[in-house]
Length: 406
Image 1 (cartoon, rainbow, N blue to C red):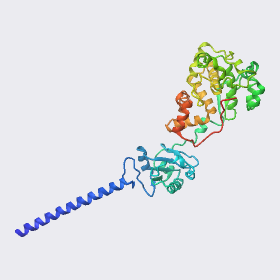
Image 2: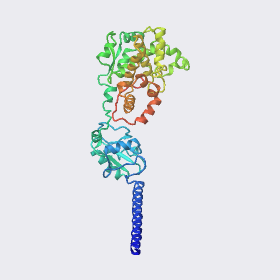
Image 3: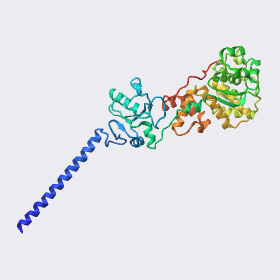
Image 4: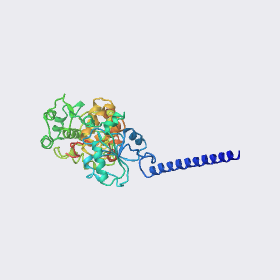
């Protein structure tokens, strides 16, 4: 019995040793895993850590999780533009990374995730960044194609230019009527001067003949003609804006010093001889009040002023367009929508930026409220600077649009 008792005690002690060994091994394994995560090996890490599926790659499913707690720079390196994944921070062509080093983080340890359409360009870009000294770089395996196959959305903003600035342009629901020949007769427009500096096609020349059924159309070819012709109307038409707005109050004695007044050089003689002088459209008092109210809500990105302070050609031209549409009795919503069309061709880069901003918020251009888009928040000079910082350089650009002078 004594021998059996001693054996039992030895077995019991061995079990205790084995348990201690198991606890020791398990604790060591846990410490090792956490140490590797802390050292940035991509296994655990902190919030939003990148979990690699291969050498420098991340899968679509993994990326989707990481974007929910984003702590990395996300760069689209595909060229030409063929879409984007939401939350993209920058667009840099894969073969132009070195030339665009200023757009990259200065910290070589910063986390960077690259992507393209298929993964080929982003893989090349990853190699380039590694050679540039970046240590924490990954790319999306399969690119946007793989992202879509995994069931995630790719934003394709390539159609924005055709929505904001269609090749055929826009036709406004108002016509030139006999306005231009009357302005010529009054001397507001010196036709010889006008023809020297403004490019005109057959339709624009026909407007000077006073064809009453000729609608006002704007496109990339005639945007300067439209702004100049409407500018002349806005200058000469009597308006409550020139009485109750800043040009009639704070700047009453300096009204001739603005780009919209002193800058109108296409008249016979001094532009101020025609400023706020004629009842061309015969607006009623109620219509004048309505023009003033709508004008107060319409801004332009060349400055911080509303159309109720038309101190440049675009402001004065927009005022004339509003007056024409109010006289026709169009509803406010339609007036704002048509002024936005004019502004878009006068300031194409800005409104492509605005459309891109809304698209990234999930709102297509045809669903954007025109009054909102024309507001101080989105259409003033201050808004232009802020939006450019937020949206960044666009993958598409335009090279037309009028200046603030004749």
